[in-house]
Structures are given as C-alpha cells and as structure tokens.
Amino acid sequence: MEQDAVWRAIDDQRLSLAALFDDLSADEWERASLCEGWRVRDVAAHLTLAQTGFRGALPGLLRARGSLDRMIRDSAIRQAALPVESYAALLRDMVGSRGKAPVISHLEPLIDVLVHGQDIAIPLSRTRPMPADAAVAAAARVWPSLWPFRAGRRLAGMRLVATDHAWNAGEGLLVEGPISALLLVMTGRRAALPLLTGPGVPKIEARMAKARNSPRGKR
Image (cartoon, rainbow, N blue to C red; front, side, top):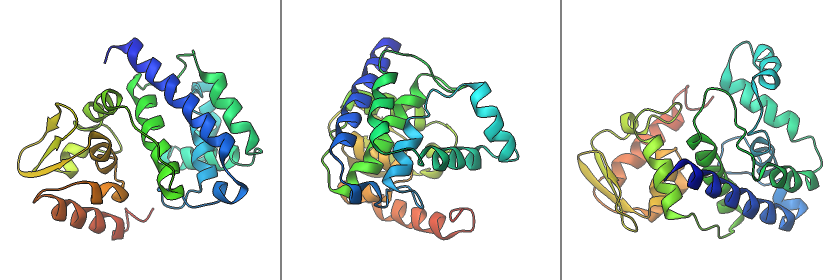
C-alpha cells in the first residue's frame, strides 16, 4: 500500500473503532482483552495515545526507568482513568492527522489499530472485519524483524500462506488461513489459531504455549 492509502486505512479503522466504543456496555469495558492483563478499557486508552510525541513520552519513559514496555503499559493505565465516553471522541479527533509516536514508520499505527481492534472485539464476540490489503501491509512489516514481534524469527520453519490474498512468507511447514488470522498469530494472538490449517499449526501452538509459560512470556 502507498503511504496515503495506509493513512486512509488508519482513519477508517479509527472511525469504526470509535463507533464500536460508542456501543460498548459498562460490563464490556471491564472485560479482559486478548492482551494479557489488559482490560478492553486499557487497550482503548492505549489506542488514544498513538500520537504522543517525544516530549509527551519522555516523562513516562523516565518514570519507567527506560523500559519502553513498562512506559506503554503505565501510560495506558493512566489514560484508562478517563471516562470511557471520551475514548471515541479522542479517536475521532485523530482522523485526518498523520501524527505518530517518534522513531516509527506509518505502518506501526496501522498494525496497532488493526491488531488492537481485534484484541477488543474478539473477547466481546463482536465481528470486526479486517481489510485484507491493510492486513497484508501490516503483515509485511511485522514478518521480517519488527520489535517486539519478530515474527520471522519466532515462526522460523513455517510457510505462511494467506487464503484470501496473494501473500506468503517463510519456508517450511505449511500454515494457511485468512490474512487477518495470520497477522494476529504473527503478533502473538493465540485466539486466531483455530482459523488456521496445515501441518505447521500444532508447532506454532506449542511454541506460543512455551513462550507464554516462560518467565519472559509472563511479564
């Protein structure tokens, strides 16, 4: 996708997420998301911080003693103290802007909104279609070595093939499925595994379970 098309996709996803937020009940806001230890409310709060600049992020990074992971989590928790009614408006305010966090490309906000949208929707049994072209652009960015996913390294020995788009990556045991499910698995979401087929799926499941049970996976 060209950069303009990526930003249009980001805008579309933010608008549709805002509409979803408008429809959530008080109970749904407090449900667990696909992100371990994060509520739906926390993930929504994180998405509203996507345009935080260096000056805004620096105090949080200092408080987190240089840990980017801790800074991201802490900032989401602080933002989650806002009334839930504010999140839809904050997302809509971003539409048309190309603001983003420092030192990242235009593709990281796309990955964020596509994947975190599913982190919210799937546990709530909400259907949220993922545009195939946008998912392919995100997958192409995630596959090589993008921190923190490093999908190509974690899924070494697997050949991922999309069944709804001309996209594939890797070599080895075949894993097939919709590009949306492949993107979710590439970013560590076990919930998408039932949507995949092929001899490589059990191996991916075993690797993800091992990573989840390791001391690093539990952080």
